[in-house]
Structure formats: structure tokens, C-alpha cells
Length: 511
Image (cartoon, rainbow, N blue to C red):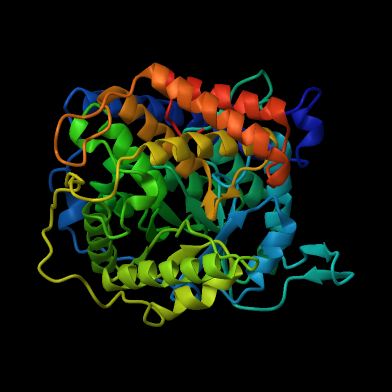
């Protein structure tokens, strides 16, 4: 729970007039958000009891002839560079990279604390009006945003998150609604090159699209704008939503411009919904191929649905990161990027996500310009099985188990020191990949490690997990002075304890 700091006075410390603007939106939408969060919990419980997600019955969403009108300003989104909004230098560099799109993030890649969110909001507002700058210490000059046609997307926090301390009387409000309203209330539409564009994260059902529809139109109307003024894209980051993509688009058809396969959160959700199934003990994360069937089927289905309805289909992030200091790692990372994006293009997707300026040209080059909306996969099953068991891929190893524990300690240590995404051993790790690793460790405790020869799994107990965490913490504290990790031994110990507690208590929601 993100809470405003002690002594915060909403009437004094929020923008003048914001509370009067926001109160009716909160009154209408906050209770609905709470009901949707409860529905998520019920869906997960049903899945663990055997009632796995499935396609919905035919409806107007799937049988009607409706289409989305894609405006020219976002027709080319062959790459959307993404990064934390609280880092002004990175924001300016992304906007100057030449990427067709940039997503400024208030969510996964940031620590969910009041100072970071408020800094992110300020940076977004300055980026939208073109005034954001940073001080280039190496060159001794101030750098600003260069003129260009880059589309600026803004990812607000997800529906699962509450925001405390901003409503009179102590009521908790929706972090999603608060971020959206705070941006829209302060933005100057006369200085925008295109409509305010929001990225919707962490949705888990098509019913949630109706909430977002009413939030987007409600905020627009409160600003005196036409209801469909604010546009959006949405991430498919949960397993149940993959079965409801067309219905999700339908509810948001007056606002939405495309879907994005947020594949790392999607993998975490897939594990979470199949946590009770021993057939779903996934291999070490970095041994899972990018074209594994449980990803590939969602890609093809997403492209088919989006293109049938006139919307963009965007691919996900490649975790292996380029390095200007390590030529061998850089070559490997860029080769992996090209192969990954070629695969997405072959699945008829229209673009991808990247996180580093050196990735932009390679990513863009893999996709036909400006998009592939006129193309669809041929002979695709309309209602495919999106849970093909991942047999025969990757490795289940002790090395992978230790790497998972090591990464979650380092990631959580970064969060404790105000960093939401960290470059660790060549991979950009954020909340999504932290969830994957914690869920993988939970699978191994519950079901053991599958044998390479198809024999019985090797036991891996809660005590074994504790020993792994202890050993990796000892290694990390011994090596800390040789690494770039923030914090000290105290925050490493706290990160190790929190990470193991999250696993043992079964707390895997994205927080």
C-alpha cells in the first residue's frame, strides 16, 4: 500500500482544485475497483480447485462487426521503449532515441512509494509538454527533449494497488484512478502533440475493461473533454485475460488502440494459476525458449483478434540487456533481441518493447512498416488451448534454483533502496521477473524438481529453500563491494527475509 507521507494535507498538498475534481470519480469507481479485486481472488481460488480459465461464450463482443479506428499518429509502433518515469535522464534519452513510441512507467519499473510516484508524475507532465531536461555531467550541459514524432504512453499503476493518505477521512482510493486523474487534471492539452495516451497494466478479466472505460471517459468529462478523448493500450499480463482479449477490446473500443503481451508477468500468472499442477513445474527461467508454445499461441491469437478488429498487437520485452562495457555480452544480447523480434513479427505482431536505446534500430528493423494490421495468421483455431504443458524444454537445475534465490534477493534489495528495476547479471529484472522466480521456487518446494530422464522428481523442501537463501545471501554480502548493488548488508538481509516469507506465505500478487 502506497501511503502519502506523515503530515500530508490533501487540501494543501494536492494541486488546487484537484480534490473537488477527484471526489466524484473516487465515489463512483473506488467501490467497483474493490469488487473487481475480490473477483480476482475468487478466480484464482477456482483455478487452484480445478476450475481453470477458459474462453467465454459467444457474445456481441465476438460475433459483432465492430472495429477500432486506428489514428495516424500511432499507426507505427514498431518499437515502444519503456522505462521508469522517475528517472528524468532516462526519460529524455528514451524520447530522443528515435523510437516510434516511449512508455513512461509509474508501475513495475519503479518502487511504489510516494516520492517516486510523485517524481514520476512530474516528469511525465514535463515530458508531455516538452520541457523535461537533465544535467549531463560528462559533457557539462543541460539536455532537453528534441522535436520528434515519438508517441508518449503513460503507464499508471494497476487495479490491484490502493493509494492511501490522499482522501479526507482516511479512505483508500484506487492507485490507477489517482494516477490517471492526477495526470489528466494537470496536463495542458494545447501543448500535446497527440491525445493523452495511457497504458493499462495488470488486468485480469474483460469485466475490468468496463471499469477502465468508465474511468477514462469519466476523467475526460470531468475535464470538459469529449468522453473518448483519452486513448489507451492494454497489457495482457494475466493468464485468465488471455482467454478474454476480444471482450476486453470490445468494452474499451472507443478508447483502445491495441494490446501488448506483457510476457514476463504473463508467465508469472500462468505459473500462479497452475501452481497446484505438478505438470507445470517450469524449467529455469533463462532456459525457456522465447517461442515456447504457451507464449506462441497467445501471440498468434492476439494478432488475429487485434487485426480482425483494427487494433495493434505489440510484443513484449527481451530481458537480456545490451552492454557498452562488455562486447561479448552486447553481441549476445543484440542477437537474442533480433531473433526474439523476428519471431514476434512472424506471429504478425506490429511491434515490440525494448528498454535500451541501442535496441531500438534492431527492434524496428524486424517489423514491416508501419504495421501488419492487414495480415492475420492463417488456419488459426478460434478458441485454442492456451495451456499447452511445457514438456521437453529447458532445464530444472540446482544452478537455476540458486540463481532464482539470488536474483529475488538482489531485486528486493533494490526495491528497499528505491529502485524498481535493476540490471542484474546482464538481465533487466523488475517486479514481473521477481514474481516468476518466487513462483518457480514455490513450485519446486511444492512438487520437487523433475528428473531429466522422466523419473520421479527430486524432493526440494522448505528447509532446502532456506538453506539456498542462506547460502546466496552469504555470497552476496561477501561480494557486495565488487558489485553495483545499492544498500548494505542490512538491506540485503531484509531482502532475503522478505523474499522467503513471500514464498512461504504464498503471496504472489504483483506488489
